Length: 165
Image (cartoon, rainbow, N blue to C red):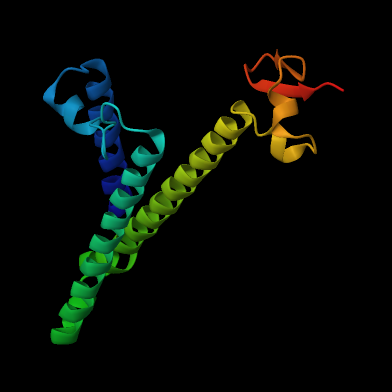
């Protein structure tokens, strides 16, 4: 029963600290708790490059988690009594793998987002530059004539090219 009181006291302290940080957002505590983790956008950097930097950031955290897991494994090989320690067992078997899985998910999601943004940009750039020639059977000279096409704008400001005649 004493453990439940300790757990409740811990969570009460956590909630109080977070509420204090919210009430005083310019304090050192709030700046530490709510600091942005990860790469910041650079001036002139494309969105694809930014997401790829996030993927590298996640991969570096994954590598660190794997190295810490291997260090724990080696420590267990030298001293098997370490596993009797609850703190070591929780750190090595729960916390480090969770950080590793989180970093892996971050890296995969950021890489997928960069590929997605790159394909969307490419398809928008291609559709805005007159890719209709690939989709239609008309020659490029017919498509580029002033009477050969017209530009329509929809609500999302995408350019839609329709071919006449």
